[in-house]
Image 1 (cartoon, rainbow, N blue to C red):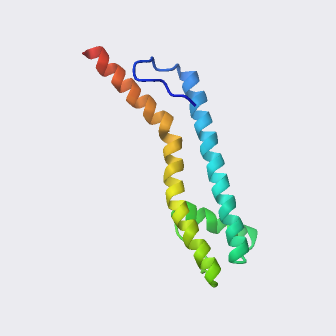
Image 2 (tube, helix red, strand yellow):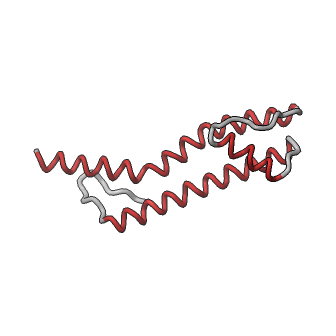
Image 3 (tube, helix red, strand yellow):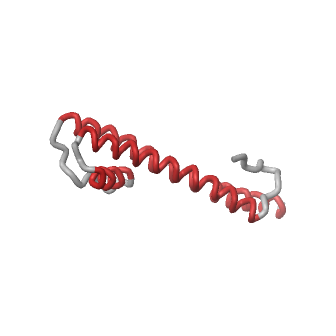
Length: 117
């Protein structure tokens, strides 16, 4: 997943779309891993069924908030740690997904600026 340098040409559109697909696939895998961690924790610590665990982990991961009250201390500690992880993970995953788009935009703007000078 190497990006072109400042003075290199912008890659052709098909190459960019392939790169975007790689970043999207990597981002999706990070989301799946994060949801599985949440589901496993809520299943183990809060005694939720798999559907409720999935629902809870997705809601926490996206920042929407909890949907089930945690009754035990272990469940509250896991839920708190998962919420802290999710806050960082969601923003990081969004950053990974947007990297090729922002890079291409900045690269094109830099090349246009250099051509005008």
